[in-house]
Length: 316
Image (cartoon, rainbow, N blue to C red; front, side, top):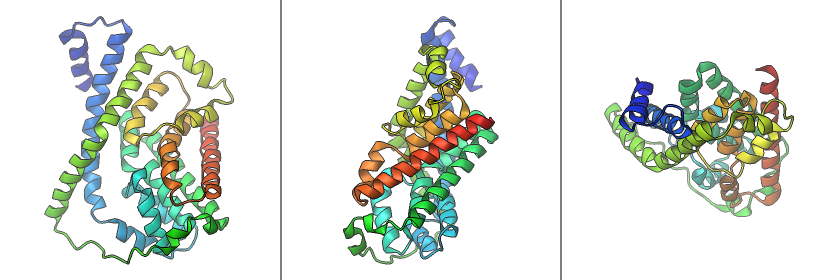
């Protein structure tokens, strides 16, 4: 029905020819805008209800003093249902460290939260099917668990800014028990708030995806980032790092890239780099991490994300 509606707007109402690139790009843009915004609304509302049971203070208490590896696994899974953007990285990092959460466990949460969140999983499911969504979620969790575990084993606490350990945020209180109707009200408010903050990024990303879909020749992308180029995966990671977008914003671009023939591993690596290793997030994290630890974090993430890309290019 959505495809029929977008075709009606493009070809019947606007009277565009069915062959030119502009019509193809506009049809892609209208269809994906409606589909993704509808999916976002439903997803954010449902997960907002779930999130009402996991406020930041409760999340900190769950992760506090957990053993390594078990704590990394738990932190990575909690990151799925408690998604925070990179602007939350500094207060979350301070709160987690102060609450006694091990450094490696903290990183597992901070990696998983933006990269393997509910928006990414459900939108990937809606656009590519459950197998692709499961692959992304599984590899994202492995990256979050593995990177956090390695950072924990390296014992790099000395490279956290000193003021972080001096701040006393207090133990706080776990959110009071709410009636379900109150949680629904919170979900409505949170859905509207998040949509107000991300809709422009989503539309811009869909516009980029539409341009790629309609104007970028397929052989251009395949030539420089296709299966024949052994450096396609690190190139995708390098292109993704300077970008800043949440999962909802990058998925339309991913969709257009896959339509042009890029391999699944290359696209997954690009998406992970954008959502979990963006330059703006590194700038924010620099406020709490010294440069050596930030460099270790970036290096581990680049290696693991690139490895994921190569592995899935080999098996898919």
